[in-house]
Length: 450
Image (cartoon, rainbow, N blue to C red):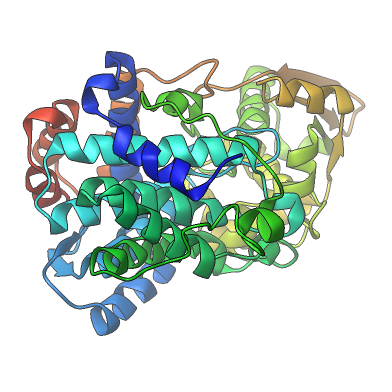
């Protein structure tokens, strides 16, 4: 039986010596990808709203606000920096049969806490490894989506574990921190159902903030429920049901994390890649398209294909990046799926609004079985007005764990994303610092990110 004490003992057990060279590199890829995406989100209004709130509610000089040349408390920095890294929906994802969280949601919290105690780069790497391992194991063994809970219900626990590691909390204090975080901060799935709004992209920032706050409370002597998972009316009884985790002190779950190639919801990646390839190969003109039909797996149909609310009504970015009809229509028309496809004037344009209403999404049960076996299958059929039909089928995409991006590919993505705000010399310095993180202090990295 998985217990709160088991998670606490795991946090204590993790050592940098237990990380393979491949695991270290994967963790560094996650950090580099996350930093670039966060910088790219500067200026987005929901992120600016978080920034203004942090300025008012969480002033301080503990931790850096990325891209702002400002500081805040560690709690405020965790909220702000996680809002940056999550808002664009370009972050990584962990692919489990019943849950698809975004482990990079942990990074802002762990970095903020590490900076507050002047931690080493090596300590930061351990904290992020802990968070990714816990997030992956909870997603795989204790999915909560179908029970009405949002995946950031896992994030507040995993981030607390990572923060506890970089703060150097002992086993008892870590157990209290996990108990506080997991008891008080459970999020409802309504965030991602029906008419989606901007909280979808900020909810994990709230979880990151709560994780740091819980760990800081515990570090000051606050007791929490030491039986969060196994206790009467605890997490298992109320949130998840029974489950077992198999936590690896080598933190290898990071190898099961995907990197997004497109600015699109996780489950759309294969379909978007397929549509763009087909449109380019066949030189398809969007005005000639009669129908785009997607056959996909159950999770994609549920979340972004219409199973949790109409996805043909698209007026905002938050709705667009969770609408398969919009993403497939825009990808076909523009041969791309980046930030430009979510600008208000692009969303409102007649060509995409017309075409998205001619997109159908259906589940193929064989594809659901293949997804649960580790693929991300999609079959796209495009019918033209003259009766011509084009078909493409994908089992994964560039960035999927079966086809992972190399360091050079992640670095190229970083330069594309961070290049909106940071000059090439500084970007090169960030890349070099993360690549050799064990030889640096956390301040070396956050000074560059400021």
